[in-house]
Image (cartoon, rainbow, N blue to C red):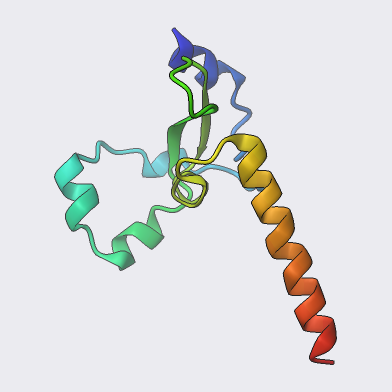
Length: 100
């Protein structure tokens, strides 16, 4: 039921970057495929919708997000991931202004 709810809550975009998901890329991927697939293949599937946990704790609350975000977010909670993204952007802005 929780995955079903996440599907119905999804507006077709990644909730973190706002970029549209590409449902045309949906396909079953086995554990062996994930472990053995080439980097090129993984990059071409980056907008494929996937199911991710909202929390680290075993709470049945899910969200639909891009494979790209899911891989980047990994085991972080939503708040931890957003905080990390802000730190990356802030650091980039500081280092870019230092180089000018």
